Image 1 (cartoon, rainbow, N blue to C red):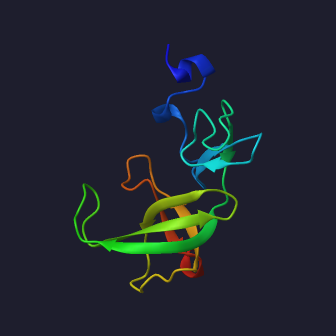
Image 2 (image 1 turned 90 degrees about the vertical axis):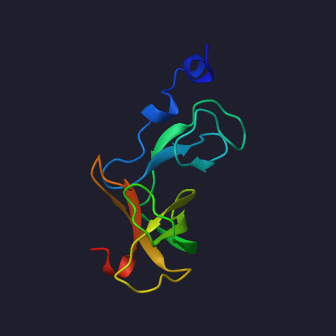
Amino acid sequence: MGLNAALKVPGTAERPRDDGQALVGSRCGECGAASFPARAVCHRCGTAAPAEHTFAATGVLLTYTTVHVPRPGLPAPYTLGQVALDDGPMVFGQVRTDGTEPVAGMTVRVRIGGADETPRYWFEPERFAG
């Protein structure tokens, strides 16, 4: 019997990653640690089955890099960034702008694409995420 079965939680692939508007992960009821994607066991204190949590749709871009190697569905170059969600964990994802260079410290908003879209989610600067 695997850990997920013993804890009666869905496997990683079956846990929701978003609700169509924001990212969904987990938050521990004991220590408050937030995780994306959701975890079966808290990474900070080891509590079993942290609660599912929908995070704020905004955050701050901490750092970013431009990638020059294409991936399926992502022609190069594209930008990847590390975002600290306003009430959650740090998340990595694509950063899309209007052609301007991203700036560390700027406010960004998560965007959720269609079920078959690559990538499924990305971040845009708040100033034009409307």
